[in-house]
Image 1 (cartoon, protein in one colour):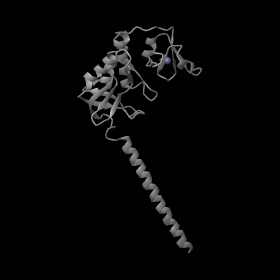
Image 2 (cartoon, protein in one colour):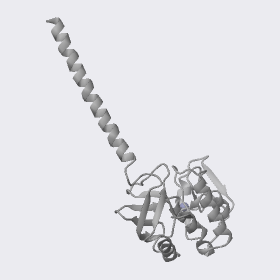
Image 3 (tube, protein in one colour):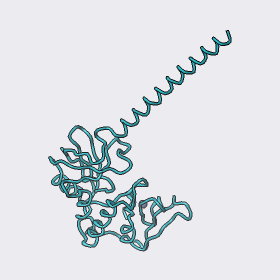
Image 4 (cartoon, protein in one colour):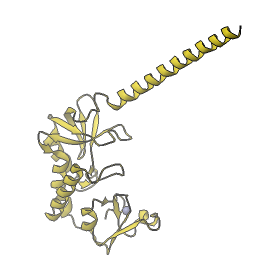
Length: 222
Ligand SMILES: [Zn+2]
């Protein structure tokens, strides 16, 4: 009796083990498929069918892609139309190669990538022409070769006072950023009041903040 009981319990454990193993394998496979789905592979080629604004395109097959690490003017801002037209003329109807960083989609489900048409780095061309800003998030790598190229392109546009950089603005005595935030502000911005003690960085002018990879706050527009 004791032996039979033991053996039944052994079979039970074996069945449990198999069920758990199968479950783990199924979960891993699902995760892998999610991670390397066909439209998410780095270096994948896409046909661009439509431009939404200066930094967003629609791809053949239905996906939307946001150009990584840059930001272009919103609808009510100067150079919105120019930025949109520039992207359209470079990309629509063409096959693009897309490179990803660590995060391949944003919270809206849009792909996030660096776009290349042949050898042209489109994200960089936008900044070179002063039609957008470098715009980093905490999970971007500020030392990556692409970000370094974008930063250099922005410096050129700034020096040449191209497009956005030709606009007049009211200068402040200094500008402020929080460490690791990648945004800089006018001293009076409400975001500055929220910066924790010891986390504040100051820049003597706008150029200094921009050259270090900080981008203008969307609210105080420094
Ligand atoms: Zn601000």
